[in-house]
Image (cartoon, rainbow, N blue to C red; front, side, top):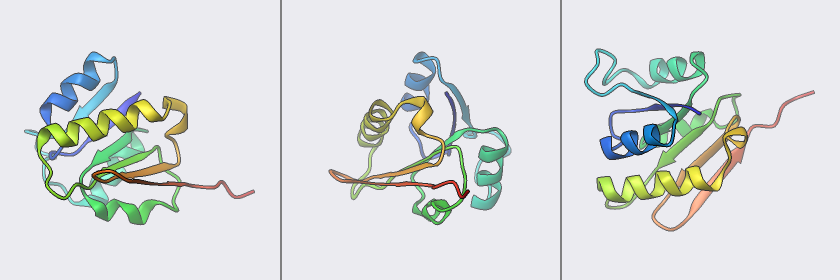
Length: 119
C-alpha cells in the first residue's frame, strides 16, 4: 500500500511499515517537512496515498473523496503509543478498504467515516 506520513509519525513506525512492504513517503528531513496542511493533502492525493497524521485538522476532509486518512489523537502521545495505534488500525482494515475511509484512533476508542460515492 502507498502511505504518506507527516513528520510526527515515529521513525520506528515508518521502518515497520516498510518492512511490511508498504511504499512509505516520509517528509521528515526533506524540504517538504512542515508544509501547510492543504499542500500536504494535495501531495498525498496526487500520489494516491493513505495519509497518516496526528493532526486532527484533516477530519474536515471526511466528506471528500480521498485515498484514506488515519489520524492518531492521544491524550499523552509518545512514539510507542502512536506506533501501537497505527499498527492496530492498519491491521484492522485491508488495503482495499482504505480509499474513502477516515479513521481517528484515540487512546481506547476510534471513530470512522466512509465517503459515499454519489450516483
